Length: 105
Image (cartoon, rainbow, N blue to C red; front, side, top):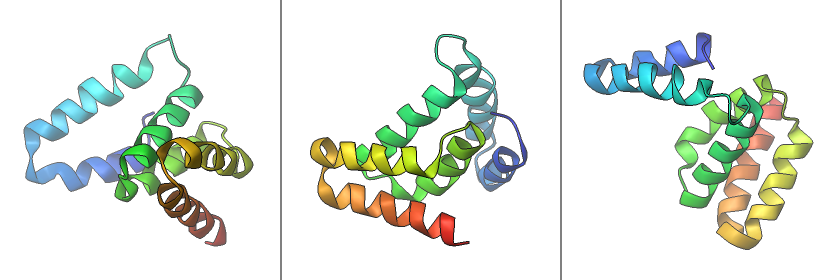
């Protein structure tokens, strides 16, 4: 999951050097690289979790990574539709709004 976007996100973490180190080395260099789930599957799990928990601020970053991992806009919208029944309609609408705003750019 390495790349320019991760480096940009990590630059925001300069305020907390240890947090940045853990994010970079444990989360991205270890967890995201494990063979049991593909990056594509990890993106779906991550977006599902963020949507379900209402962590919309982090969605833009992970939607972009999902696209980089081969997930289509159609798949993302279907994911939101499915999760609306489990995580709540407002959460799904908020996520769909983020997805729509990305496709308009």
